[in-house]
Length: 288
Image 1: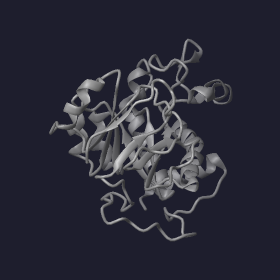
Image 2 (image 1 turned 90 degrees about the vertical axis):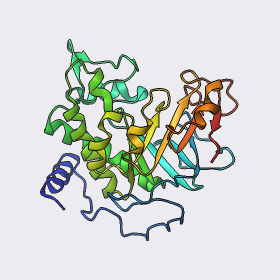
Image 3 (image 1 turned 60 degrees about the horizontal axis):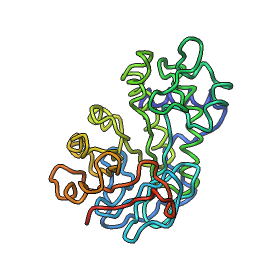
Image 4 (image 1 turned 60 degrees about the vertical axis):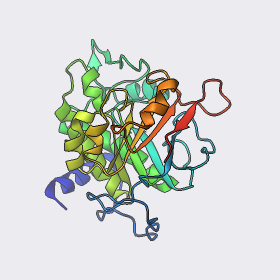
């Protein structure tokens, strides 16, 4: 364990007032057996998604996955699908819409402020950006996010994906890429300590640095649409890509599946990731 890791753990424990094992993985139960076709990470030796398995992204609410799907991404407040490999979505760089008002009341010092008010994400107007600009603030934020990551583990998830790493680009220069990389590095430590693999979410230009910081695989959005897939596949053994009907277009998806530049695992979903039965629901996966 490096001295940096020790300092991170010590500071988080002090801020959160909780105890944590320093060994990284719980010894309460043996690790799950690894399917022969499933990759492991060179960074952490934790089990990764099967790079050949069907995938579904269900942040709008869990439902029975389509036939052939065994890797499923769901929100941390949802239950894992429990049919193969489960990825837990955590918004680690800004508030979730339902929590924004209360978070701003309790932790105004941990949000980017503009004209005396929490800065609103221009792309997601009901979310506020976490202020990752100092060591002290990063430690305080880690103390808040740590129980969410630990909760993913206790719920039965196999990995976490941490969203909105690129919040610095929407911060009005209040944050830098270095601030968010430092925060992301702490999240990797917390995930591995909980016995979870961790996925990079978007921000392709930082893939090499995040891989070096301990990230194990990638969950990407629209990497075919923006010609970014190679930036992930050059770094990670597993890349799961979601394309959206309102961007790439349903008609273009079958052809994209034949592209040599796509991620090995690619699906198309509706923009708001609604559940089956909703008029806007759409799911299609590339043939294995």
